[in-house]
Length: 473
Image 1 (cartoon, rainbow, N blue to C red):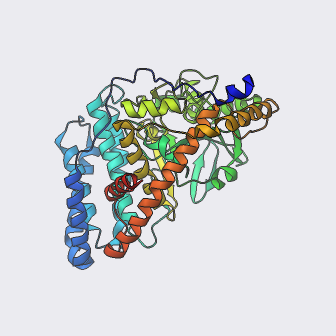
Image 2 (cartoon, rainbow, N blue to C red; image 1 turned 180 degrees about the horizontal axis):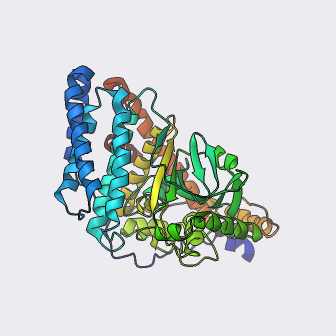
Image 3 (cartoon, rainbow, N blue to C red; image 1 turned 30 degrees about the vertical axis):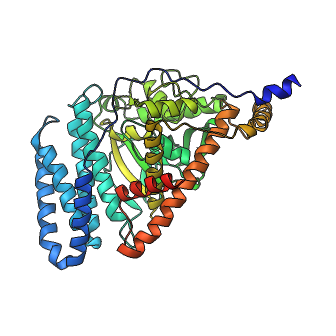
């Protein structure tokens, strides 16, 4: 009877450690987004021919501003950076009339990413909040603006090519892109927890997972990655691509990085050593997200640890999770380190070039809806909402956990992942259900919106829909 009673004892609530002395980034421009949406609709009503002169002028202005940034160093508070952001958003709204010309804007966004990241090498974004804010505004903002346009296209491109950064490591072509050994892949899964990882950050992003690519001399490609369910493993490229991926970003070390100049094969050696370590023995998933302890590894640590062995330290500044609601929720899912290596933030590291990004056109909107749901949930967390779970199911979950421990001991995978408690497993289920309920409410409102406006709603409207759906719940 004592054992049975123990199965019903609630798990004590996790108490988060002190969060970092930081603050979440806030756009604070709802009026700007609303005006740009009106401008988009007005341009669409006028038509492409009428908007062509303004589009041409906007693209020419972007080119001129990017030429200035490519010509020499500028500080993070240089006025041209604010003008560049303004020009980009204002010009983007004009493309409501000319969807066929969106690839021209995409080319400028790719160039913006390249020159701004080059400039950011001098901004000390690892310790200067103002410089980091500017970098985020331009890179995340340009991505967001472009994707709003892609979502209005009938047949948006699935592949956007970035910089074909030279590399001497073995290579292979995957889905139209030549990738090299040592490349880093950032991706986004389709589960609510993936959205939580991507958005649960002082700088909310688009990616929830990091993997390291290895290409052998014969062209065989593998990825080394850490999964919640199994820990670190080595998988074929085909297996990696077959998993649900809403987007994949390919990043590569700059060929002019001093470490690469000294040893052009460094990325391949780092990937080879990571693969050999993964195959040598079991490495558990690091739910605490302790990036400084290599004994257990979460996904970002796989890439970080591989390069750190060669004195290359990725991530231009640690990711931070500082708000009270977010840290309280993360603690309920087992996280204890709130300065860590967030998958989304690797995109901003100036040591890396963006080679290409695949977006699944059919699921890009799903990505945006999932983000909106998480933003609404995290707003609730800041108001005091708590992570829940069905206490009546706790005894069964604990029995499932005991079975999982036994299966893990023989190298198998149980229903509750290694390192995750029974109560945390139920919290994951709670998140899935809560996310699904709000998502359903958004989808109903999207259908009505599209019937009225004959287009998809922009992101800020999705968030408003999510708030309505959450309140209705």
